[in-house]
Length: 603
Image (cartoon, rainbow, N blue to C red; front, side, top):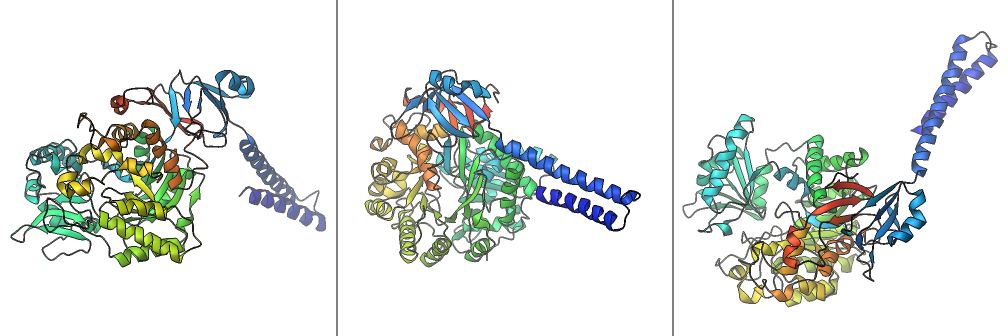
């Protein structure tokens, strides 16, 4: 653009000069003179803009962060008190005196950490950023301890929503395991909230939704509806219960126009504000399809945020697709190659292959111990899963596949291995998301096939109470075994799957280190032999997460040449009682050397 301005100005000047010269009108031709002056002004403007841009590019922004305890998480476990940063990159680390002596005189800003601990920025390896942002607008159902509580929450919210002219009431977070009768809600329950507008209440896992009668009518869901890889539940009399499972949730999208680019940008920024306050600096997110209306607007929203310099987090998109032809179109249009300013990049193909343990839809080899005849739901055939993975590999795209049940994990591992044997030239960081119901053979396959594991330790906070009843003692012995992943050098990465769980990394680390819920139960921890050390947990949240996006050479460790992304904590999680880790707060979040969050408003 700048070059065009310069060239345009010069062309106008030269053209005006030649016209005047050949027509002998240099002295009396006012039009020629104006043309020459205009050309010079335009050309000068181009050179000026170019010089300003060049000066801005060449300008070095220097920072010193001192009087801290920087746990580098490098191979030597070095701890420093100060770091020196240039243009967002760590240039040196050491003690206050030496860093100040070497760089202090030429440094723009010096930030005192007041003796607080700093760790590499948290990198959530699997969440749903857009859905988290939207959940901030929903009816909060996590605290419901009965179906009556759900109804009360809906009644409390609906009057305000109707005043706002909202066409539906949406909530998320209920968990029937907290209810005394442990039953799913039904359409009849939600009809008590309203029969005039659709009421849509989604289970905490996101794999089951309950809707009222008006929603069934609005979305044209009747007795004849069938959807592959999902269930529209009916009672013993054949009447719709209002419960939708797995792929059946897609029926709720059929009438949705989808969010606009501006709307998506607003939701993402609202979510970003919350995540920065939790010390999160990088996010691997599956939200391509969640705004509705196709994937294009999601991509455009993130690209616009980068261009407007409003995207502070470093985002990698885990690209969810339900149909192979849509994924193929995505590839053909070149969207998989996007990588902008180390802020937004398009990452692996995401597949949603089975369900959840709590909803009894995770795909198992054997039936559920507490649900005779049910072994879960597979969203795809084995051939369909392979076709997706092979298409991704042929286009140099890694995969991140949601698989919770042991049978589905096995199917996905074999599909990855088969595709790699055919596409031998590729070297990709493929992974499986959740990896909950395992067995010895599956652990060995993870190691043999070099497949990554995206795990969520915070799931044990609620799930420890149901695992054995769902799958029995023998299968439970191999389930949620995060320490086994670490001991086998499988380098698992940590995420929260938010909004399924809170995005708070300290709660996640607490769960990994104590194996207890937030009430401190069970007293000795659930399967205490599977507890991680704080160091192991922090590595999973930083360098291991960076490994899943093949960025371990850029982030995850505080050392020379790495991004200056780090998080300052209120207390030293390496020193305090592990029981207190969940209560530690974030005091500062730094990304690229810029303070993006601070409790004392330091910027």
